[in-house]
Length: 186
Image (cartoon, rainbow, N blue to C red; front, side, top):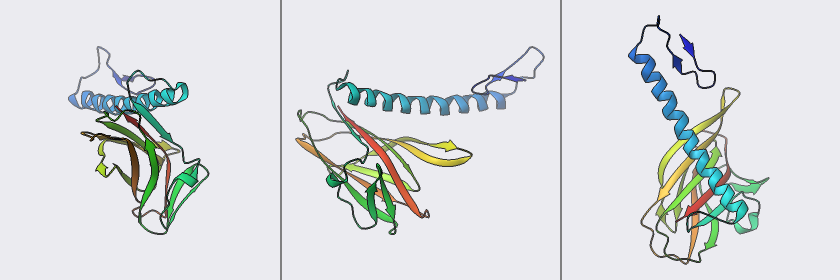
């Protein structure tokens, strides 16, 4: 049976036997690819908002690249260097990423995207937990390089500013690295 060039989806010919397993495998592959596409479209949209300082939604965007460590409160075992936050030593840590001002107190939701390696991340905005939406691993040379996570925080109270805390758990890894996170309030 032939397969498509880029996604290896099945392409049946008249002589091929049609099997349910082949359809299910294709659907699983498509679901995974569409999830990744939605994640990256969201990130690219946010990057475009950050670059142009314009948005199609009345909202606020924050894109943290860990370039200014003086604004981040690092607990023991966490350092910010070379554009990333690194957890070594203790297994867990709460990274206070600073306070961001808001010009419109009427935002009720926030989306967050985090890129990291070597553990797990959970996050809060003014003490309200972000709920995971989706995540996937980016693979490089047959080994997991980074994990992309998307979170949603709903029913926010009226805000004049907000703080973000990333709860880091390096699990069994020697170290954990956070490369960036982005937030869109709307």
